[in-house]
Amino acid sequence: MNRNRNPSAGSRSFQPFTPQQNPHRPTARVPSAPGRVGKGPAVIGGLLLGGTVSYYSYSLYKAFSAPDDGTSQDLDFSHRYNTTASRFDQDVEFTEWFIGITKLRRKLVQQARGNVLEAAVGTGRNTEFYDFSRINSLTLLDQSNEMIEVAKSKWQQTRPKDDQCRWMAWSALDPLPPAPGASNKQGVYGYDTIVATMSLCSVPGPSLFLRNLASHLSYQDVTAPTNSNASQGSDANPPSRLLLLEHGRSYYPLLNKLLDRTASAHAQRHGCWWNRDIGKIAEDSGLEIIDIQRKHFGTTWSLELGLPEDAKGERRQQWLEGNRQKIEMMRRDVDKARREWEERIRDQIEAAQKDEELEKWRRHQRDQMRKPEP
Image (cartoon, rainbow, N blue to C red; front, side, top):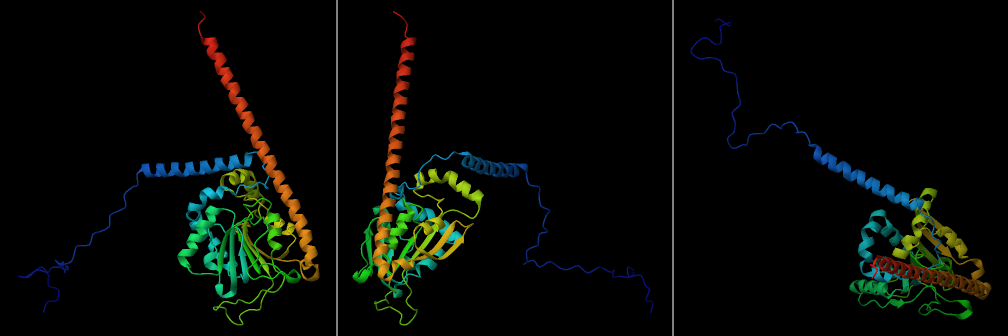
């Protein structure tokens, strides 16, 4: 047999194998090379990016170059919250969740024990985090009727029959209502835990605010909860505490300079002084600083404060009297700053009115000169 025979010879020619196409299976398309992107989108994107960078650069330049207008930080602009109460939660909800403020609120508030007071409750952004198995009573205060009505409405939707909570439109700079069932015998008076979050930025005289709260803390150990949900033998009763979550000055001088330059305008618009030194305010309050933690370049402060030794035992009444005198001095300083501000505003209004009258007189003189002579 000839194995070297030409395969093309004979009646049957050699054909290479080719796969048959399945008619029920779609033909795969070979991906084509990507087309070139036109210049239009790239130009538009570049313009948008350049415009954004230019806008923020100009804003920073204006902030750093703006002179200090001399507005006292003891001024009260908190009435701004009356107009923002209805949309406040909507404005801050995502931001607080995204940067972790909501988590910090939960961590702070769940430490509350016994008779609890929350000052400057706002729209009630902390109320859902309280552990009522460890609480005897909860008193919620805010000087803004609008803010506290929003908070109360939210509360009633989730806890319509909860009788552990009481709501009051009350300034935390004034003498506070006593804790439910608290005794005033032998100087034992007040709340076991006082909570305040994002409040030192909006009160006039923040050291006054802390001193006033401190004067309403009980110096005895926290009373075990009496409600039916109380956990038995869970934790040893700690002494009374003032728990704070605030925002203020940073670790970094450059960021502090930016906060300083924009603080007055921000306060007059939003009711919040965002450049306050929270650490110094805590020191000036005369309270014992138990713990401080900071986040977000040092601008977010978590503080745990307690009563000094002078506020306990037989020296309690003497400390209360000294604290009361300092509170009165601070109130006078706050009132003085308010009067000076009001006088400054009156002067500005009078000057503007004089300028307006002078401009009217000048326009009248120009009109008279333009009239043709008879």
